[in-house]
Amino acid sequence: MSETSRVPASCPACGDETVHELLKPGGHATVRCTECDHTHKTELTEPETTEVDVIVSQEGESWPTTFETEPDETISVGDEFVVETTEAIQQVRVTAIERGENRIEEATAADADTVWTRAVDNVGVDVTVHPNDGTRTDNHSLKVYLPGDYEFTVGTEESFADERIEVVGIHVRDAATGYPFDKADVDGQSVFAKDVKRLFGRDQVTSAWSGW
Image (cartoon, rainbow, N blue to C red; front, top):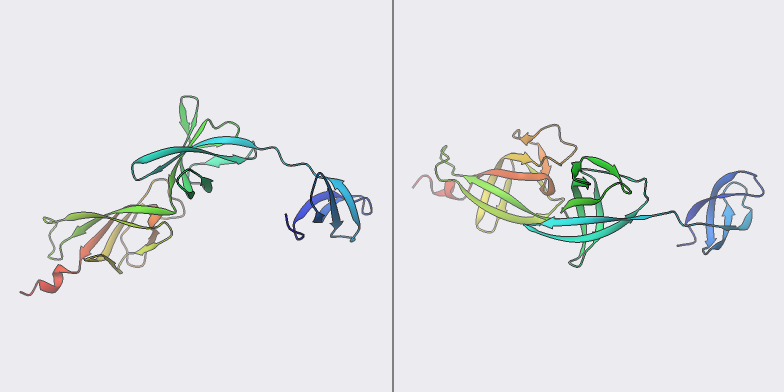
């Protein structure tokens, strides 16, 4: 902990519990009251934590890990947090919570048997490309890999290798939060890559040859 860390403690000068600056950490820590500047020693106890079993899924593969938090911390579907796995340190999003034989939307850390998550720091996005002739008979699909916070916007162009498309629609994942729509289909509406269930685009490469 740094010298600028702050902790709650009882101040013998003020007679109340106030915010203190942590000057020297340890079981018997040295702290300074931010109200009256009185410096004294006090016993600081670490908060109780519990270990939660987590399953991380990414591109059809899954692996187990754990994370520690306070027992009464509420975990909900859609929450995001960082876990350390054998693969990497990853940002994940809760997709389901298992308690006994049931899958639930929310639980305290102490009550959750297993938390199912999806990696969202780097994601694969499924894309359906429509031809630029008004038909959908020659649709083709591709998958692109992007940072989870990459933003797609309806009405803009995107380039993926030899593909160039205009974004015309975006289906939003069920666990995503903060969107007033299930599908973005109005110019200017945006969705982060980690929240995309499927992106629809209109081919802008073959359109260059449509006059031939």
